Amino acid sequence: MLRRKPTRLELKMDDTEEFESIKKELENRKRQREEVSCPSGGGAADGEPHPLRADVINERIGFKPTPKMAAPPTFFGNL
Image: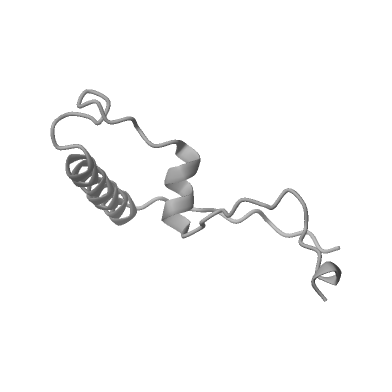
């Protein structure tokens, strides 16, 4: 195996400015999303229960769990 010198990474001012601008954009989006989802300060205060974390994730990815049947159907009995 060949050995090589470690790569040196340099942080430039442009990189930090870009990071700060992206960070501000993400914070603004998050703040807007929170204002839209609960404009009056929260769902629990209004008597609405907060959805479970798993339900939020399932809705976001489009997963709709279907309950499994207790016993598999018998096709041979119907012939």
